[in-house]
Image (cartoon, rainbow, N blue to C red):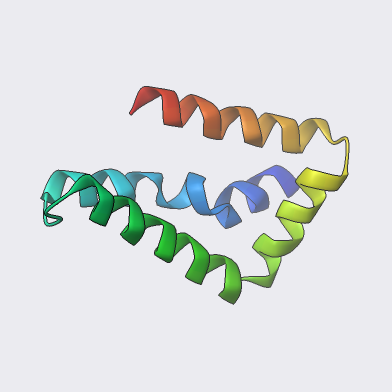
Length: 81
């Protein structure tokens, strides 16, 4: 149950498909604009979602197998694209 909550709250896991759609739309003139847009959206999400802030702190400060698994999943998704 905790894992499902984390997966639903995690920015990169929940928005990965949306990011791919943005890339597919090709509405950005340069790769730089796309990267800036993605990072700004990530920052806005982090600022507005307290739960995500707690999850990042937990990931950075703890030794949780669950958070290691989430991190690994993010890395795998990044390798696919």
